[in-house]
Amino acid sequence: MVEKDQIDAVLPDLFGYHLLQVGNHADVDLLSASRIPHCVVMEQGLEVRARSERAVYGESEALPMACDSLDVLVLPHALEFSSAPHQVLREADRTLIPEGHLVLLGFNPWSLWMLWRFALRWRGRVPWCGRFLSLARVKDWLALLGFDIVQTRTYFFRPPFQHAGLMHRLRFLERLGRRLWPILGGGYVLVARKRVATLTPIRPRWRPRRRLVGNGGLVEPYQHRRRPPADRSI
Image (tube, rainbow, N blue to C red):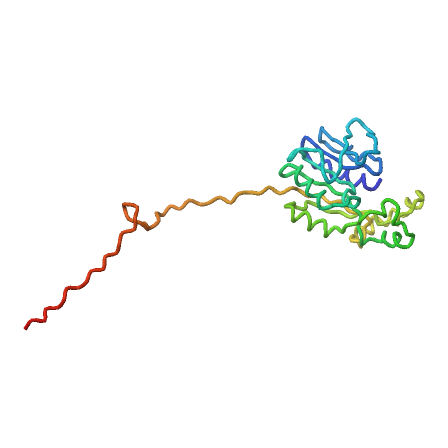
């Protein structure tokens, strides 16, 4: 799977103790390349049954995790199928530790895939029924939340055909696409790091300030002395 290859290229460089993956739409183990010891897959929807012992239930808009508890959060197409994608990113900001990493997979709305989406009227089918968000928009949202973009990569430059043999013969389009038209990839992977808010140190003032009040703590009154009248005697 193309998306698993993209995740496998990212996860080995991310370290920590706790990793959470939100959703598993394709029934593929995306976390096999991770070195983090505690990996959890969160299933969404009450009709979904846990497919493994490490699965939990929840919603992407309200993660069942404590604040500042996750080292890595993986969101495979969680924004496209959420009614509140802003809230999904706010939950990522809440649950990630400082310097924690967010790994996000998304579909590119400006790719050649959109031609098939409109021509074949696949709006009512997964994944075409989702709300695709551009990479630039997701970057802007993450910047507002205080994330630093570590890396981005586009992939899948082949048409979305179902025939396995035809897809295999069109593999050369992946190399050409990454080199010649990278912005037209059908999907993208984004890695962002939660920024740590640092305090600006205040430099001590070594020079003493001028005294504004008197020794007694009150402002000394200003006495206006009248000059003595001039002697007009002859």
